[in-house]
Length: 242
Length: 251
Image 1 (cartoon, chains in turn purple, yellow):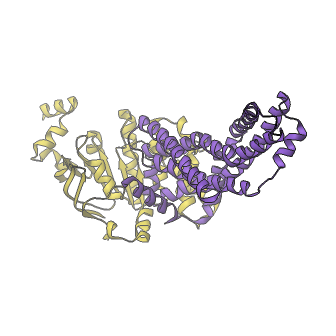
Image 2 (cartoon, one colour; image 1 turned 45 degrees about the horizontal axis):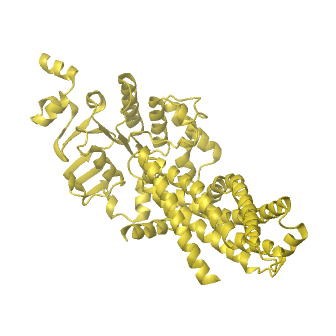
Image 3 (cartoon, one colour; image 1 turned 120 degrees about the horizontal axis):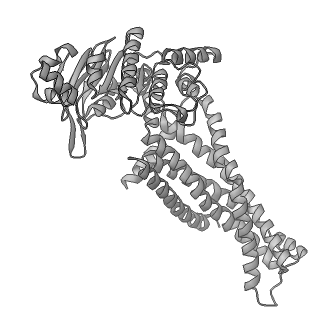
């Protein structure tokens, strides 16, 4: 409970005693490049294979001749857009982005760089953490949309190349009874997960004490706690919004 | 002037500082000395506001730091420059960006060319001309300290704090850093407080010395008076080194 209280105080500090607003756009852009742009390759690989595997496994499980093949496309669409693209992408990002944020802030803490900011009268939480959270909130939805698209493409390619489904059946399947809210739901999930991953990782890194070993521990804890938070939030959002 | 009144600090069950008071005069190089783990750095961090003491006051020219509003604290902090033990340079920024950083964030009125002039002046003052584009990883320990000093003075501070400026440096470089701190104190009329356990610093630049032992102030006075001090812990500290023991034998 004490840690939770400290976490909320930490979050309130990101918004209180802010520095001049004009310094933030550049910081946010830098973080967007680091958090978002540098993650595109990883997200592309993960999401393409998620779509491909979902397609092949769904085809493998559909043994009844009464079920039309285009259902494979429908299942790939719903599974990837609703769950796999946002959740798996964000869990992968919690490993990459979360450990990066915690490691960076942890190193700054143990090398007294954060103390240097505080002595200068700069609110270090606001200066260092606020841009990371904002950049995550802006970039995660983009990455999740990208992941969703590539998952569908991965499913398409795997289906066509393995011959489990024809091109027209797959395209028909992914358009069949399409519910637009699924996209909205994926974006909502991305925003919530972005906030959880960036804030939890920043909190873990910011309060690192000790040396290099503790920075490593903080990074590991950031990833572990972010993943757990993402999974709990995933369930709660599904329960509330679907 | 910086005045410290009855500062006490505890970490858990461990009492780090007990009722420490001292006055640090303007344009003076004051030293806080003592053995490792005696609370010197904690006292310094209490003075600059990085660690809040349980009891006591820190007055910057009469302004009580811990009773000040956030706005007033920010104003006081703008008058503070600090050199950290490990220099605390921002790894991902060049030397120029490190020194320029406080200007970019805290000085809205300066033009870009004025900022560059100020950065170049500070780097010249610490004898680091032509190092603007170097990264901290390319610098030696002594050069990092110099950049740290340049960053600390870039905003024309009234108060300069140095946490173990000689740690990790060879004796010659240590003396040069000490001399630089002393020159800057005189030149810019800064109130300087240096935390050190280096006897060269005590006798080289210490105009006023505070001796801490197990979190308590046991002695204070000028460097000239230190040999006459009637405090056994201070004598043990001063003459702990082999060289100083030989000096004592010749006294």
